[in-house]
View (tube, rainbow, N blue to C red):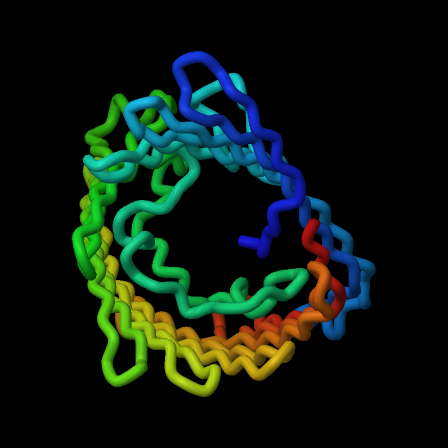
Amino acid sequence: MKKILLATTMLAGTAGFAAAEVAISGYAEVGIYNSDTAATGAGSTQFWTDVDVTFKMSGETDGGLAFGVSVDLDEAGNLGNSLDNNGTSVFVSGAFGKLTVGDTDGALDWAVADAGSLTAIADDHTTHAGYFGAGGLDGTYDDQVARYEYSFGSFGIALSLEQEDNAAANWAANSDPVWGVGATYAMDMGGTALRFGLGYQSTTVAGVDSDAIGASISAEFAGGFSGVIGFTNTETGGVDTDRLGIGATYTTGALSIHANYGEIDTAGVSNDSYGLAVNYDLGGGAVVMAGYGSDTDFATAGNQSTYSIGLGLSF
């Protein structure tokens, strides 16, 4: 996700509500992008532009029940059709916890940390073939997820469900929803902030069972250093896929540097790749961004490398 800063806020009072808020934020990118594959040789450098607008609406009842919705116009599908609401999510929260429904993470991805950090205009450092995104089985169907989460002290738990979409084949075949459970624990150890994540998801699609389990440890150290290591194992129809991810970030003043490494092992065949990113904050919502992703050692990814450089602008 791109870094988004709040730009415009409108407050309105409505009968039956303690408060309501509508916020509009924007994000834009401009720069250059290049892709190099073994099959085609060096790719030509292209101009890159991207514009994103996000609406966030929230409110609270007189009894303290909070609710809201997020709409990402860059990704949103048919906003009038609950079966095609990519880019949108709705939440309700209170003392009972928080329920989020829509384009959101399943319990495994909610609990297990991704390897990536910072931003590049073409996301080169997080789109290389072996990148560790801890997605579990999310997206098996239509990516519309219902997730319940609750926190108590340093612990957090989540339950999630992604139903079969409306494709006739899913209903006719022996298919089940994707259900998941996740847990997190945060602690401070001598000034180092640690977060542990553990998640599990399972489904059956056309009679084929799939199970995924994942775990991660992330840390924020003194001196501007942070890091994460994560692992997932997915078994589908008796075939195991192991994914390992390691990420490290260093920030000093306006400068941030990040590197991550990912490895995928499927049925004993292993491939790896890596990504790099550099950000320099100019202030006022403008960031100079450079990114690089290498799949050159990833036999099934076409031996591709990409890079981009430009400006990210938050409004």
